[in-house]
Length: 142
Image 1 (tube, rainbow, N blue to C red):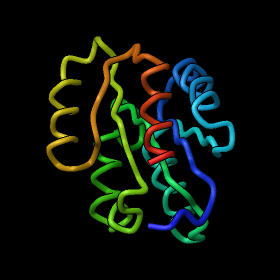
Image 2 (image 1 turned 30 degrees about the vertical axis):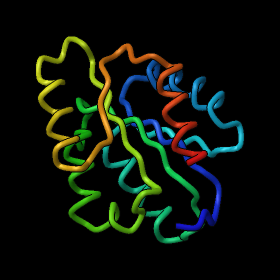
Image 3 (image 1 turned 180 degrees about the vertical axis):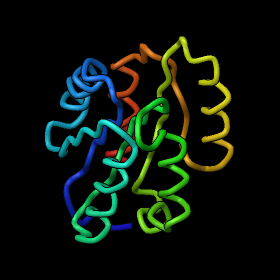
């Protein structure tokens, strides 16, 4: 797919501190990308719908927390798939789920997201910012 616009790094987490932390590494990964923060799955879904409508997006890298109000990370990714957004973005969209280490279900949900083709992988918080930056940089330059 041709890259028609700017790359986007989308950070989806209900914790301000986590979004701030990941933003620092997103800026290091690609100083030219647009960084968008969402406090829940619904905000992220709406942002993805906006991007798909205007069509002026490059590659999209998302880090998605699961335990959020309004729409969990896994439910949001399922909605993206079920409504056809994931298909529209194709290989331009790469998602990693990130879970708090105290969430007993994190590993199960991460595995489910990968097996359902909703996420490329998952990490446990505190995820290495350098690792997330490296993953996004690899995606943006592929």
